[in-house]
Image 1: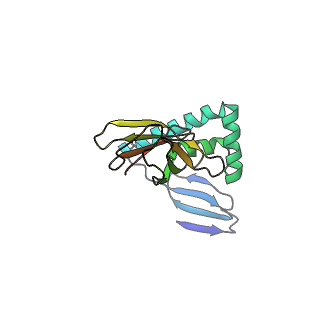
Image 2: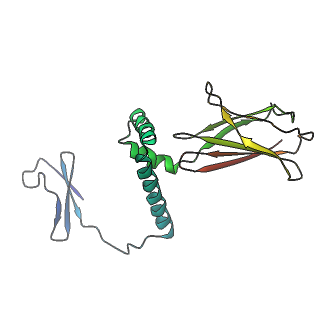
Image 3: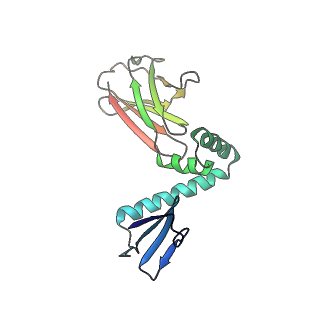
Length: 189
C-alpha cells in the first residue's frame, strides 16, 4: 500500500486499474494498494444469522417509521443522540434488550400491598415490566404488571396476594422493550 500526497498525476484518482491496482481517496491523500482477492463469499452460519437479524431490525424500523407517534419519538431520540435519523435509532433499539439493573425485595413481606422495586433501563424505552412470585415448591402465588413511578422512573410491583412463606420464594421479573426484546431475571428470597 502506498500513500500519495500532492501528486498531480494521482490527485483525485479512484478506482481499479488493470485489475491489479486500486486507487482510493482518503482526505487529501490518494491510497494505492493491490486489488483485493475474492475468495469464497459463502457466509458462515454466524454471518447468516446476523444478516437475518439485521434484516429483521430494518423491517422493524421501517414499520415504526410508518407510525407517526413512534417516528416522532425515535426522531427526538435521534436528535438527542446526534444520530443521523429516526430510522437508525429504531434499528439500534431492535438490537438492545432491556437491562434489569437492580431489584429491591426488602419491601416485600408477603402482605398484600407490600412492594418490590426495580430499576429497568433500555436504550430507548421499556413499556412493560411484569413480576411472577413463585413459592418454594414451584406453585404460582401471584403475577401481574409493575407500574413506573413517573418521578423516579423506578418500576414498582404491589403484591395482591397473601404469602405466609416468603423465604425460598422466587421473584421473576420480565422486562419487554418496544421491539419486543425480553429480559428475564429471577431472584430467590
